[in-house]
Each structure stands twice: as C-alpha cells, then as structure tokens.
Amino acid sequence: MRVIIAGGGTGGHIYPALAIAGGLRQRHPEAEILYVGTSRGMEADLVPRAGFPFTTIPVAGLKRRLSPSNIMALWQAGQGFLASRAILRDFAPQVVVGTGGYVCGPVILAAALSRVPTLIHEQNALPGLTNRLLSRFATKTALTFIEARRHLPPGARVILTGLPVRPEILGARRDEARAALGAAAGEFVLVSFGGSLGAQSINSAYRDVVRAFAGRKGFRLFHATGEQGYSAFIEDLHATGLDPDSLPNVTVAPYFHAIAGLLAAADLVICRAGASTIAELTVLGLPSILIPYPYATGNHQEYNARALERRGAAVVIRDADLDGAALVSMITSLARADEERRAAMAAAARALGKPRALENLLDAIDRLARSSRDKGRGCQ
Image: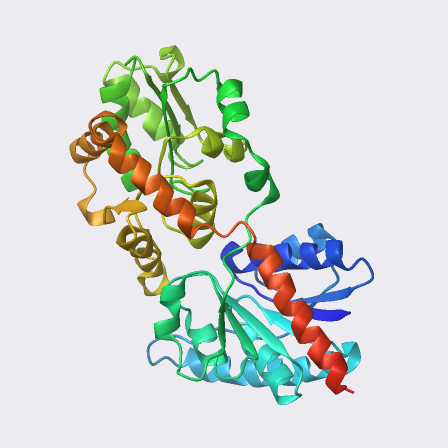
C-alpha cells in the first residue's frame, strides 16, 4: 500500500494527519507513506519528528478579501499543482488523503485529475474553504460533525467518521485517574483550560471561580492558564489575598501535560471548542462549558460548540458574554443543584463520541486502496 497524506498550517490539520499515518503504519507495516506539506508550516517540524518521509510543495493561502497578494498565491498554487503532479508520478500512490490546510488544494486536485482515489477529512462543524472546494472532487469526504454536511456542495460524497483521539485519552480510566489525584468519592473535579497558549478571557473569569471555591469542601479545581498568562493570574490571586500553593483543593499550572488523566477524572470541563478537544470530551462522555475562541477562522469554534449544545451535551458561553459571577453560578448549579442535568449532558456527550474514529478512517482508506488496485488506477 502506498499512501500520500497532505495537511498543514496548524495542529488541527497536522495531528489528525499524523494519527492517520500512524494508524496506517500499525495496520499495514509494509505500507509506504509520504507526507506532503509546506516548508513554512508546523508540519515541517512535526512530521520528520514523527518519523515519516516528508516533502514540500510551494503554496500560499488566498486572502478572503481583495488583495495583491492573491496574485502571488494563485501563481504559487499553480506551481504547487505542477509539483504535486510530479510527486504523484514518482510515488504512484493508491490513495491520497487530505486533512485540511492550503497544501491540500494542489495535492488533492492533482490526484483527482490523475484518477487516484482521494479522501479528505474535515474536523469542524463549519468546513474550511479548502475542504469546501475540494469536496466537489474528492472520492470521499469524511466528517467529524454531521452538521458540516449542509455547508458542502450537493455532490459531495460524505461519510461520518469522527476525529481520531490520542491513545492516552482512550486508554485513561476514571477510577485510576481519580485515585492518582487523591479525589475522594463524591468529590467534584473541575478541569479548565484555554489551549496551549491559554485564554485571557477565561483566566479573567476564572479568578472569581478560584475565590468562590478556594478551600471549599467537596470541590477540586485544576486550571491551566497558558504559559503567557500564568504570572499575571498568580499575581492577581495574590492581590486578593489568595495563594494557590497554600490551597489544598486548587491546582494552577501554565499547562497540564498529563491532561488525559485529568479529563478522565473530571466531572465538568471548561474550555474552548476546538475540534480535537471536543472529540476528546465526547469520547469520554464529559459535560462541558464551552467558550468558543471568537477569532477562529469563520467562527468555526462556535459552530462546533453549538453542535454539542443542540444535543444537550454542553453549555455555550460566547467569549464576549463571559463573566466570572455567572460562571461561578453555572458551575455551582451543575455541580450540586442540577446533577440530573449534568448526568444527561454526560450521556449526550458520550452518544456523540466516536472512539473508533481512527479505525473508521483507516477502513475508508482501505476500501479506496482496494478499489484502486482492482481498477488498476494510479499515476504512472
């Protein structure tokens, strides 16, 4: 089996691509996998570190407004297309997979015109511009959220697979995780974070949460501020007479590397609404308070969050409406006064989870590879 995988720019596109590549390598040890990206994106560092052959093509993103830079972007897209055709001829893949980002445009289009089966994966409830365009040509378009279907052209051939979740998330056990934290039976564990860089608005509101629950029996709080916001958060708490280091039920850190255990132990999570985070919440069946990042492209995080809210799996607070007092009130209600609602949210989240997302994607790739072999397709 020979597979080309393309995806780049952000972790949201690269990590699913690496999960697929790793899954293919495990399922088919003899498979030849080539990752196509750009020299400027995160993939240029992450992919070689993961041990996969990596090559680049020239490509740049189009601005969503009229801009002279779009002329250069179109020229680079043409160069990227020609480079992709050359890569396809040399590598002769049976399947080409795209997970999003500008690099996918030339690669998937070149594959489609060469009659090589293609699969693109869309992580968000609101598809990105590249995947919306490519879904017209792709053999299959795999979705994380069924809501994304209505934003694609009528001819798109979609399958609902979910988004691959890290093995450590799938393997975490709630009882073991809570025991490792020292969380007593019936103790309410609240986990909150704003992503690797943190979120200033969440940190600002969360200071009220710490003040409200500091030293309060029956509650354990774990909050990641992000590297950039940690010092300011601690200083603000000190200014109000609170020292997190002296509070037995409050843990504040710049970043939680062992997030799998914390999520497994959690009763409620407060976070942004990135696709990977939501996939983890739903696989674990965790109720959540989602605060979508307001500057995400196309406001796609709010689309992700609303998809959960409509099914009763989450409560959504717009970033502009985030308020410390209101957040404290909502946490208190879900923790004690409205336990039935929280249980229903957990069940709704679990119903949305796709623990077999990676297997679903690998199965789809296997089917495309078989069809390629049966029909003798490929770039020669």
